[in-house]
Length: 399
Image (cartoon, rainbow, N blue to C red; front, side, top):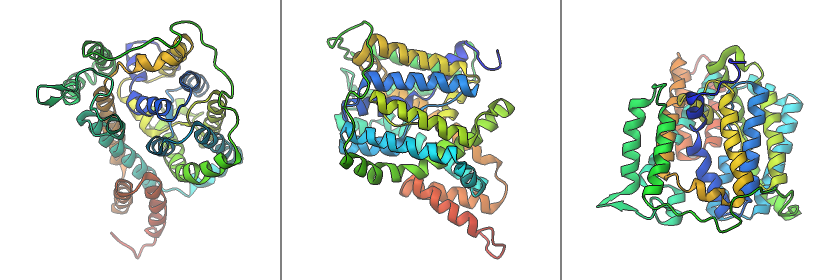
């Protein structure tokens, strides 16, 4: 049992490691796109808990970033986002149940998987730095480096830079400290900083109680919503989901947990995400997935068992049921810079998986995927990497 579930300060700290990816997109999709906060965070909590119990190791839960980023940037309706959840669920169920994902894995060289992990890590680092210096899309929408704090500057210096700098130093000193885990200290310190710097909370929409989620609160999306979602959201998301949330994730889970992650197969991960998206569709939440970046974040900050899943899952589920829509006001206490610091260290951890590559051709493919990802997106990098890796199997080609 202790191998599967541990509940201590390290698991608690590790459970918080991926908040930098999760919270900004989740909060933005509630505020910008009108998703149901109760349904969104309850579906997150349930997915964390059930996936941890089933797989028996630390399992990440993340928003689908391509869909999330596009939806936030263009202020899509909740119906369009929910349509994408259902379509992604159907596709993942098909490729998982039929075994098509295993054929995709056999055709995917290790250099491509490492390239996806390297690229995801670089994106996490870049996103984290943007949160710290105040230039992320979320902060630009609100025209503030810390949208929910009363103070935006300390003298001439942006308050996010001050908070981020202090949190980075603390993280460096405590990164491998088991008595005072870095993520736990930084997150709790961030919440205290949010209160001290005037974070705005408002419990005027129902307050504390027991809030029951409403099924299909938005009704069912129309044919136009499904058509739009298929071409604008689902098709661009698919390569990234298969590359990062399935192939790169299962590979990293095996690397971290070995035999303990025997249930984390490509088929089962696809079906897990499919069921999560069906649930999210019913509760009015956002499209959900696993992901190598999320696993690297949880692992780097101390998570080693499925206990971390139960901890963060219960936190989200209980807060959602007790606070309902007001859960957003609690999460606003955490400064964006703190989320940025978590992202940076998670990105570094994930990027370092490239170190086990040996040949020049493998490094060429991985670094090329990184370059294309930074210039375009991870889906394009994954597709290009697959093509180039196959071409480089020809012995007459050299790099």
